[in-house]
Length: 291
Image (tube, rainbow, N blue to C red; front, top):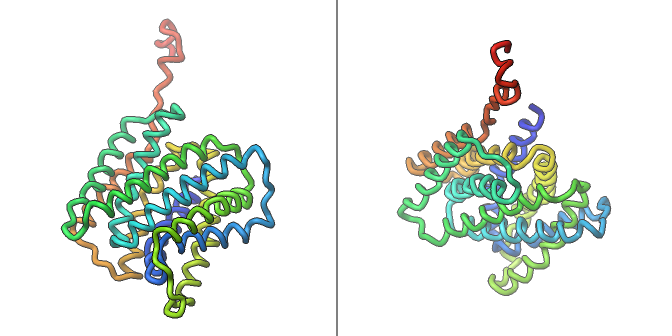
């Protein structure tokens, strides 16, 4: 029960981040925002980190796949799409993570999980039918979800690492790459017109709250497995829609609500455990009548 509560709290922080990120992206472009965010978070947690040389490559891989790959694609998508649409597209990360865990970790996938994944995929595909959205934005969101799924596999294979070490390592490894991408692909920022109070609030939320939530998620994945924890991330869409509606006043169209509804049904089934009927396989045939 405790791991379920912690999983929901982590996903709540992620869901509200869609609206908060849109506020930050109104001030500065995505790669620059991410490089500042991860650079600050890495420096804050660096004094508490205890690096082990054998874990450095694992931290680098997670930093590149999650902070650069996942967040990079998602934030570019957020800069051109409504937050509610990106939130639904991102739910593809769960079926991708479960499928990748089946391929690389040999984790079992039950019939109920498969049924839930199908509903979630249908809900995601509905986003492509929104008239005002082009193909590029949703596709960037799907690429970000694939990077998220790969990160879950890497996290499962990574030995337990001190939370401060995990945050400092992954963030400081990724920040320089994002800064280079900003220099190459983004326009220069006129800091004289940037609302520093608004940007500061966004960075506080993302540097402190999200860094801690990511470390907690990594710990949950290591302890309980991808299949048991990752389905909770589908609840992110509920919190994201609420956040974009109440904070950004984005409209909730029938297509958005239908897509969200299907993903909610999906999480209900994807999070279900497979019922294990092992009695008859354990008891010898001649003794079954006694049971």
